[in-house]
Structures are given as C-alpha cells and as structure tokens.
Length: 65
Ligand SMILES: [Zn+2]
Ligand SMILES: [Zn+2]
Image (cartoon, rainbow, N blue to C red; front, top):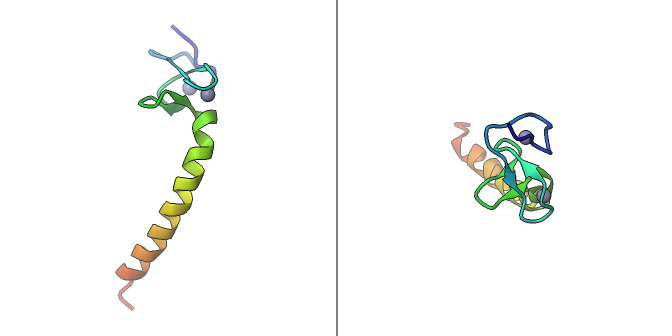
C-alpha cells in the first residue's frame, strides 16, 4: 500500500499534490484540487475568517432574546 507523506499512514489511495508533489491520502488534503494539507492551509485561512463572520451573524439571528 502507498504511504501518505502528510500523516505517514498507509492509505488505500494517495494523491500527488499539484504544488509540492507530496503524496497525500484523502484525509490529508483536497482531493479535487490535488492540494495537500500543507498547501491548502493558506487558502482555507481566508475562507475560515469569512465563515466565522457568517456564523456570528446567523447565530445572532437565531437567538430568541
Ligand atoms: Zn494522510
Ligand atoms: Zn503540497
């Protein structure tokens, strides 16, 4: 079985990162964009901020007080 370079575990299937060419399993990166966990980090950081803002607002809306 191939070994994931990110988590070091054997995986049924590994994918090659399009940026750093690391082999990663489906748990350790974005399979659709073939980006390993390390390379997709900076992208999801921006998304995370957006999500947090949205989450705050929707939480306020659902508060009954
Ligand atoms: Zn992995
Ligand atoms: Zn990578």
